[in-house]
Length: 256
Image 1 (cartoon, rainbow, N blue to C red):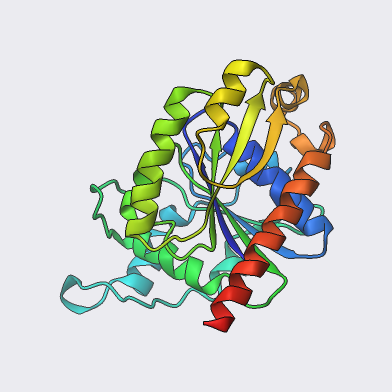
Image 2 (cartoon, rainbow, N blue to C red):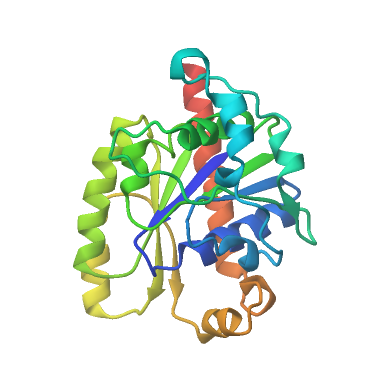
């Protein structure tokens, strides 16, 4: 399974990405988590020190990606990247950090992007492997195509009209790069009439409603992984829904 977690800044996508990685690992999956956000908070949310960002491996990227006449190799060698440039946490999640990549507009195909796309293609080898990408804030990464090839794009939103605007933009860009499955997690949810009316307008499957909880704030302040302080039940239910959703999707594809 290849899963990208996206959302506007401050909605809690890194926390959710780390919780999903934790639950998948507990269920016996081999989990690789890639931090694609320049802020690079995913390693600490998974209880490890940040490895060296892949974008800083300039010599390696040039060696693997750049070809004659300045052309890019579409299939650079990356099969050794996971072990050489990752760290593992106490329950076996392999963590990599992309780092800051050049922003060249929606069509950007800089060497770092080419390298990441190759990493994404080679990340999954077996049925019980899971790749979780914690995307940068906003939706520009979709325009650059760094989320291309994922099985499921999870958009984290907070109840509010701006969340609906973001979803509309994400839908268009996701279709442009061939992402067929989009689902939503509503974070910091407060059950009131205003929130319920807004949520009714969301047309994508909602994997779960995560209520506002101070434990996530405390985990951040104390620099501890959120799964050490917060209840994981809602995230276990979300992972079960993801498993069902992608299993049904694979079955439909096989019947075609």
